[in-house]
Structure formats: structure tokens, C-alpha cells
Image (tube, rainbow, N blue to C red; front, top):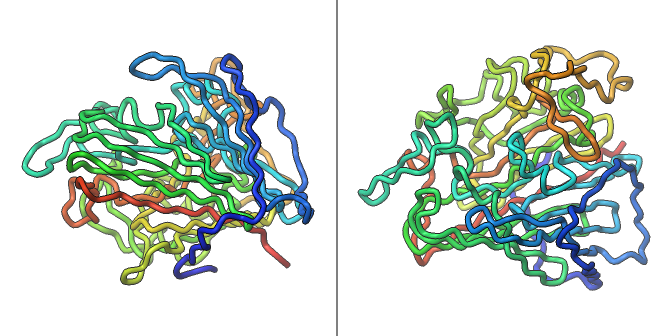
Length: 435
């Protein structure tokens, strides 16, 4: 298992850069319509990383109603990995990664078009979340002696993921420099009840060695809380393979405690040491059996990352899908990571549950999809290429400050003051198991 600090590569640009800009059709919603499989091409004649820019339909500004063109950015490296991001919500829509045989699969959940991302049952697939990721207890906080009431979009009691119109609902501005894409968004003073105008950006980059890096930054005109994250949903067996394959993933998280929460996932301010509990993932554990030992039969918890003094980007988590051989490692400079196993995605028959021991027919079952009766009250989410997404069909590793930090003095401060800069780094590093 990897551990310690993630060493950053130099900022020098690759010796060979290829950027292609395709015409953007403002009226057409672009996206894959059929699922296909590719094989990695590691030819030395291919540039280390290429970037293609095209269109992904249009959206209306959530407040002004103005029609805006959505751009899509596609990175490809010569080892077969590709990533797609759109300006709407600064969303990661696709991550295609080779398995141990070279077969390439898309390992993040999402939609084929803009209407998909705007459906009410979209659980923030791939989105950039802000101003505050996770929850704000009671939808209120005190800052410099002033109480602020922000929008309450979670059970009409708390705020979740930035409120009714969070950063994920806007079409961000884009700037391209070589194969580095920076997306930016201006959140005005009073937005969703928060003080200060905030300029936020996220810089995305794919490297030759299968790392996808995100660098979040923000500045503000007034003291205001900030806690950004990316909300990608991963399934290393392939985005459409469902809960049975998620249960077979092997997970380890570099954390010796979690934040204690109530039934609404609002922190109490206390911590729980993971030793001797189902939350002890410091040693790699098969995910399904680990989930079965929790009260909720799934994870939705902030793990407090174990870091050394003055340590920056740190090993956070490692996830392995043994059958495909795919490996995902996450590194961040943030103090926490929300580990979520899609507990609130559809379960039409109310029978999706992890077991203490995974099914024996490991190599025979690769896609076990629930049969859903016509007119079911909790139908599956219709995803890319006709995929049906259900409960426990993916996991999230949302790097972040501790949830509701603005309301807990013993948590790392989430306040961004004028003249200071919020910085948040996260790296998704993909690899394969080697015999």
C-alpha cells in the first residue's frame, strides 16, 4: 500500500502538445449514445497528452436565463487513459482507464447529455461543489459576530452542497493553456446567503502517467466560508456494472478517526477513533463485507486524514478492483475525505444489501442488475449509454475540509479572508495490478 507524501511533478510542459478545437454546435446536445470498448494504444509516435475541445449542447443561466454554450474538453494520453470535463458545473463526465489486459472502460457515472445532468435525480455526478461541500447544520452560521442564514435545501433543515443553486448549476468560463484547462466562476455577494463575492477556479490536467489532477482556488471580497470538492462517482469495474462489483472492490483509507454525526449527517464536533469499529479501513478491506458491518450498511462519513506536521499533498485512499486489476489512489492536501457508497441512489425493490461474505461466483457475475417492475416508485437513474444506476453502484472519495467546519471551532477553519487564497489539491492516480 502506498503511503506518505505525494511528490508533485515539475510544472514544465510536455515536449509534445496537441490541442484540437472542433466547431461547436450550439443547438446539439453532444454525448456518447452507445457503450464501446477500446484498447490502450501506447505507440511512441502518439503525443504524451492530447486535448480536444468541442461542444456539449447549451444551457440557460439559472438566474438570467441567457443561453450559453457548454464546452467539452477531452484529454487522451498514449497509455489509453482519457478524461472528459464540461464547463457546466465543471463536471467530470468520463474517465476511461485500461484494465490489466488493456481493455478501456469508463469508470465514472454520468449522463450522455445536458438534459441528463439537469434532471432532479442527478446526485451531483462528477460536479464541482461549492461554496460549501457537504452540509451546513441548520443552514446557519456565525461569522465575526454576524449570523448568516443560507438556503436550506436538505429536508428544509440544513444546506447541502452549496444550496438550491450551487456552483454545479452554472456554466463556468474556460481558459486553455497547452493541455491545461482552467475553469472559473464568479459567485456574487449574497449568493445562497453567503457574504462576499467569490472568484473560484479549478485547473484540470491529465498527465502521461495516468494522473488526473485538480487544483481548486478561491478569493473573496469579504470573510466567507469555503469548502470545495469534486463529487465523482467511481466504479472501477465500469460505470454500468452495479453494486455486485462495488462490493468486490478492496478499499483502504489513511485515517485513524472520523467525525461523529447525527442522523442528518451533521457533525457533533466529536471524533470517533476507527480502531475496533467498521470504519477502520487502514488495512485494505473488501468493500461489501465492510459495508455490511456498519449500522447503515454503507458508508457516508468524513474520514480525518492522517497527516504529518506541515505535510502537504498526502496519500488519502487506495481502491482496487481485483478482477479488472484497476487501481485508484487519491492524494490531497485537505484534512478530510467523505467516503460515500451511494446509499441513497435508487433501490426499487428495497433489496440491495451488502453481505458479510461476497458471492462465490466471483468471475461469473460481472453485472447483476435488479429487475424493476413497471411503474416502480424508485426507478433507476438512466445514465450513459442506457446504463441503469442503482443503490451501491458507485463510491465517492470527496476530498474536503471537515463538514460544517464553520460551526465547530475545533475543526480546521473554513473561513477565507480578503487578501488570502483558498487552495485545494487533489490527484486521482490510476494503475493496474501487476502479477
